[in-house]
Length: 168
Image (cartoon, rainbow, N blue to C red; front, side):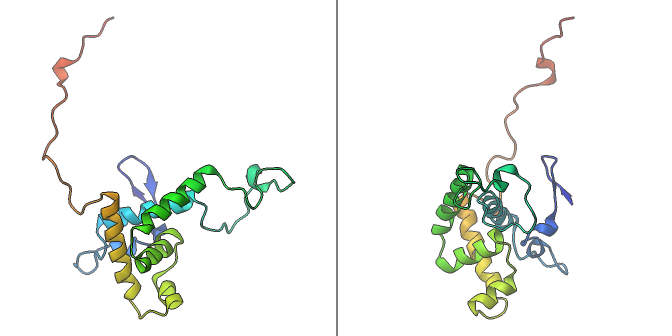
């Protein structure tokens, strides 16, 4: 578990990109932080879009209801899930077809790189390169840069002496 800046805990072992983002034997990591963030955004959208099948029982009453006219039927999908699917489609449409497929498979559907290569009949380690190219283009589309740009420091908004006095 890793503590995020906003205080949340994140399990990097869940991320399909975590291993590619680690430095190994003193070498730079294969994926830069902006690549990982772009992939994680696709992963979060895929979760909201309900693209990944559940492997456990859901006791949510909205999902469990299967009577005629009740919510939770097979054709029923939340508006937020439809919106997330639309956003994924818009983001991936801007990428080359092979890159979009690999990004969706690895980041959205959590498939392994070897599985992606086997499904497509690609040589070993080729999906890794296609993934990096796709994540690089996706990061550019999302406005994520490898380096922060802007001023070194922000403008000072106030000083401790500028606080109003307490009324007691």
